[in-house]
Length: 491
Image (cartoon, rainbow, N blue to C red; front, side, top):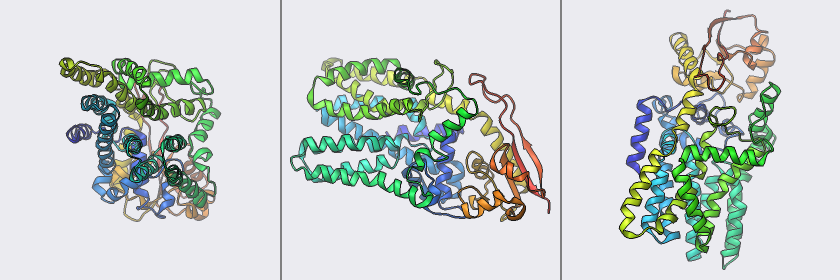
């Protein structure tokens, strides 16, 4: 698996795909700003995204080359991809008592081109997969041995999952109930629940301490819900599946089919039906079904939209969430393999590898490519302009988000920038720029808070406007990208 991981990451890096996803750029820069900021520290981890992926990147983003290239975010993703595969193999082997079925599950997981792309960039999917599959393996270990170490390992895995993605929170009560029903010593269940709950409680405490709102991740200005409400206010149509269960399930199913491929889905479906008739396999299938269920629930509640090109509005957005079903599909294929006669086993495993590689669409890469055309173009042009003119310690005010990529590409430390999470100096600079804004430069997207504030500051002049025309391939209804504005102080 390590060879596959390195090869895929090397291919993506050589073709400069590493930071196509806007979220990949953001994860990398959040990790960097926690140590490279005017106000470094835990506050810079923000409110919406959970902290573990950024904490794993932090020791690596210290190095400028690793940060600027994006490799600082790739290394944790690759390591977790390998760990996820090992835990999947061990879980399937323990559950089915068949090493060859475990090989089949691993092939479905490790050869999927969409997952290989995501493990090659600074994203959270493989980190969560490693935690989820470690949790599965730990619960199976506990079922077979009643070991206290297994219960503690499950708690550690649940904590890792719950500090990576919110579906990890969704898992905790179900796993706690499983421990309660299977543990001969019931204190194992209470120990697991208590330890696992530390992760969500700690994030609620983080939000309360730094932002005076424990639920800022849910309804704060950077939450998915708040972003959606702003988009609706601007006239955007409601997400497919918003408070429609069947539509949500239909769109999620389409995403699963696209990222995994019809052959894998069909074969796995047969295996899942077989597995439900075998009591020892019911728990693994149930646990692995929870993340896909979480996404359908989230789509219904309007928190997680998914767009696929074959369904309205015929575009790409969050297609990668379909990969949450990949471990379940791998398990289903493994169950089918257990019924294959030994004389056909090599053929079955080769066929599994073929459908794993060639069945899926390259939809995650396509999403990142289509949706980043404008951002990559204006990031490069703005970075080229500032690289030649910016002097150290001059200072730039900007709104943290997509614009942060300009700093990374231009090689400007993030501590040179003043942004919204440097609140003690940001707030007066934005509210009274005529009195408190002293940065030499300003970087804005037309209409953002910095652009609006500069209208009150007559001592800044616009020195460059970057406009990317005809961005995208037209399938998303693309228009010209918003103008990126660079200002310089004139006095």
